[in-house]
Image (tube, rainbow over the protein chains, first blue to last red):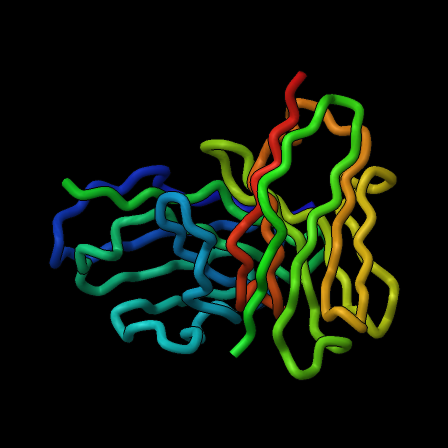
Length: 107
Length: 115
């Protein structure tokens, strides 16, 4: 199965700062990669799919890039509501797999 | 807009089974992909399997093969997942999610396995 490794595990930043999250795949997933945001006690929410396409209603401060094995989620300027856990996920190959998550916390 | 509404929390003894439901509000239920994903307390997300009701051919993660069954009732626009031979490690929130990616999510169903 394809293993997705996210880094860093925790990112401590202040509101207004830029966040850069990484997701690396153990083999190519082409552009079949998504990013999700999860806040405590809630279901995840789709942010980005096909590596760089924002889902409906997602603010422009969220952007995704990459292809093959290396992907990045960027939050250009953190808002208070952006502090959460972020997961990447691939749908290139069965079984579908998720990364372990990056927690973005308030510094 | 798609809504997924799941059944409530369940408590089971080890070795028993549980069946969780996911009511799908969408005009084209039969062709819609529904996945099941679980999240153990404090842990990450784990994909378990998926179905497209019209094809009646679910795909399961190998880890769960033989222990889970995903079915769909088109008359009720509801998808079910049954997990058998429960163990304490199956304690988790079980989510259904719809779409090629997980575009829409149910609210989650907590399953607690404990004697």
